[in-house]
Image 1 (cartoon, rainbow over the protein chains, first blue to last red):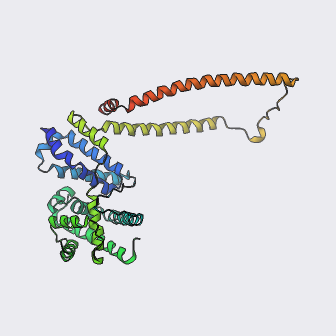
Image 2 (cartoon, one colour):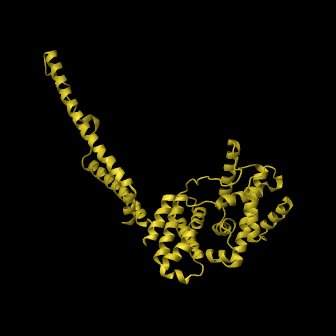
Image 3 (tube, each protein chain N blue to C red):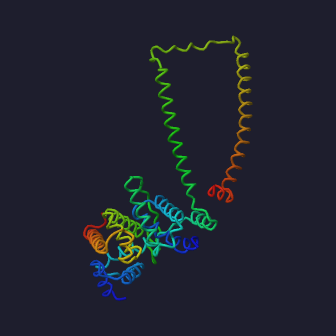
Amino acid sequence: MHLQIFQQQVLPARDKLYRLALQLLGDPEEARDVVQEVLLRIWSSREQLPEYHHVEAWCMRMARNLCLDKLKAGKVRKAAIPEISRREHAPVTPLQQTEYRQQRDYLRRVVAMLPEKHRIVWHLRDVEGYSYQEIAGMAGMSLDEVKVNLFRARKAVKEKLTQIDLYGIP
Amino acid sequence: MEYREIRLLVERYWDCETSLEEEEELRRFFSVLRPDLPEDLREAALLFGHLYEEAGATLSDPVWNAQLEQLIREGGMPGKQAASRTKMRSWWKYAAVIVALLAGSWLLYRHPRPPQSQRPVAPLAKDTYHDPEKAYAMTREVLMLMAANLNKGKQEMQKLSKFHEAEQKIQDSPATKKRVTTD
């Protein structure tokens, strides 16, 4: 039974766990380590699985905590994130590709500079599409805190995006 | 969808007034690069295109995924032990370097090298043969002996490299990998 819950509710969340860890740590290898650690911990305490109503939220919270621990311990080294485009009509000419890469790098830097709370909320809402309620559970915040942090994160991103229009990519 | 509607949605997005469905709609709309996009929607296109891409990042390591699934099917756990073994191995490397440095420092401390001026000067080579032909023959003999020994050593090395290749093949075989991760 535990194995079934694990396979049906925990394993499908591994890409989400990976993306959250990648967002917070900025290194694919470190992010993979975090996913592995989360799965290990969940499996070790699999007896508790049936007690959780929202197993995915439990996993995400654990991943977030592990990432924050790693960041606090200063164990994270940044590495290049592989560029794989899944957009239709992806840029084809070298000029378009360079421009596209520059813009993505800039956006990543903008997001990376956001305060931790803003970044977590922004990622959970805008990348993963969780509801405010779910984010509150995952990030350990109140509903109001989630909304305020999201508003500030979006505002900061918007300001930086406007700078691109005014001055081009820095 | 009309650009006018998209504009309104983008405005509401910045004010955090959009629902999850509307945000998904924006991501989907901007997931396609549109060359005819109005200028005022460029920044939104950049952002939502980025969000769409970020949401597609996966654990794109089929080997890791396959190992994980198999181990879970068998009731074991992900390659945690393999990971900690790698960490242990790097600790041994650090420890070995520290020990080597300490030993080197101790040797230097115990047996300091005398200054250049006090070091004995090696005597100049002296001729041991008076007949140049004899000297040439002897040198040739010595060099031939060295070459023969070197060739013998090379043959042994080739045998060793065969062993090494065989060992690599065994280590790379899926059966061995599986055993290592389950250990």
